[in-house]
Figure (tube, rainbow, N blue to C red):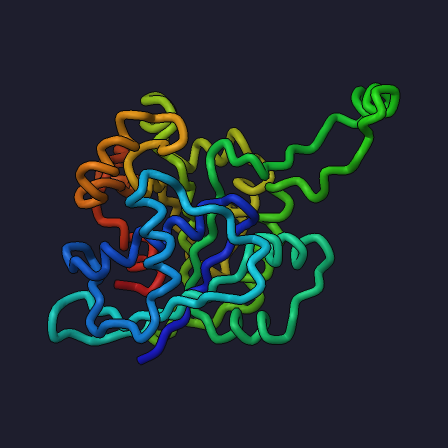
Amino acid sequence: MSRSIVLLGGPDSGKTNYVGRVWPALDAGRGRLHAAVQPEDIRFVLDVADHLYSGNFAPRSEHADDRRDFEVVVAAEKGGEQTTIVIPDISGELWLNAAEHGEVATALMEEMRSANGALLFVRVNSEADVRPLNWVTSKQLLAKLGNADDEGMPTQVMLCELLRFLETTLSERPDGQPPRVSIVVSAWDIVDQQKFAMGPKAWLEREYPLLAGRLKDIEAIDLRVFGLSVVGGDLKVDDICRNDVQENGLDGRGWVAVQDYEGVWQKDPDLTLPIAWAVGS
């Protein structure tokens, strides 16, 4: 049975590094999902993994000329039911343009209508994050400084628009249940212990209140929020993390923040969890 999972988010939201990191996790087969069949073409994910193994995050692929989709057959257990997961590599710039102008290419709409699950990414402290200004107090000052340029759609508004796209286009799952969307807060390793204990849901409520309110109003899709660290640290500034990756590789690094049965947020080493939940495994 074929299921398509759409991977989406704005520029610099962590999509590419997750795809490059989750493939080794699927290949190792120690998580909720494992690769049941070797993919025909994994050059894209291997390129990203090479960057990570070298101690660097993969460069943003927002302006790449060609799409590099990733398709893999997975199963929850050996010999069990197999599912084809198709993750289209659609740039954050394309998603941002779709949210800003409401113009979605026919091919992209078909991609979304054939999907019954999605991962929506937002990154902590993203350089591409756009926050709305208080124009009552700021516009005149910025004009005097010669810096009144519009930075574009605020990030949380863009994310709300992407949720609207998902709500209106995703198909039901094969069991007739509503489609599932994993909200993935990437770079969750850089938050302090207090923010970690409160969880990514609370972080969204504080940083993106409009988005958090939208999440509470959605009824057509099931939602779950995850925190994500692809390598367990910030390779840009954490010398210890970067040196360890370069010397010892990625095995055992990275985790997903999930709530246990008592509501406590914990680090789970299974990087496949956001996908597994989205497909219903």
